[in-house]
Image (cartoon, rainbow, N blue to C red; front, side):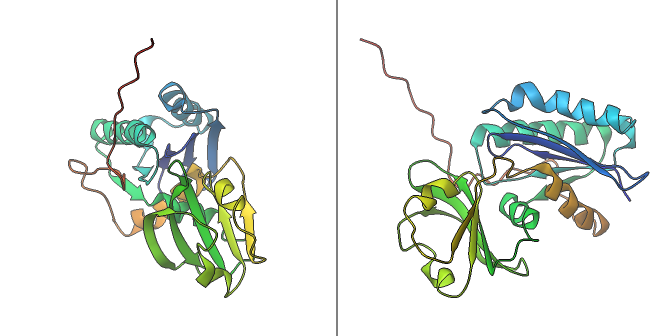
Length: 227
């Protein structure tokens, strides 16, 4: 089994996981205290490497949760992952964030899984997966209203989760709508689990040209002058 380090920084949750080839164990470190990735990411990586008693030259690949999500979080995670891959001459593996989120709750007994990442106001980044984790609605930004996802809710039980699900819970009353509002989602453990298959298949990113999946262009705003 390869030594793979995974990085998840698409939301306020800063999360790192490491699979150790010596015993197959996955260890991880996460914190959700706002957008503190710049302060926490490197120390978390160092802590996991020390816990596994690994050196950086033992790593076989870096896996990155590639979005959609926070522009700043994605930039920090991507620049860290690409920098390590360049320095260590190892491949980069990109994992869809929403797919990893669905993979992380796949054991729960629902007919459909709908990960949601907050995109401000009543908009979320989302996708829909069936009980076999087949993507049946591709990644997209979506403005929520009380009729959103009715075609799935009328077919069976639907689990909504992620940091964008709270806003939908406030407006939906359908009996088949269920919610997991854990602040641990997304995290790096399912990212590294999905990366193991991609590593086996040699499904790597082009390191020079890889960019995260922003969905919407970054918009900088100028603060208003205080009068």
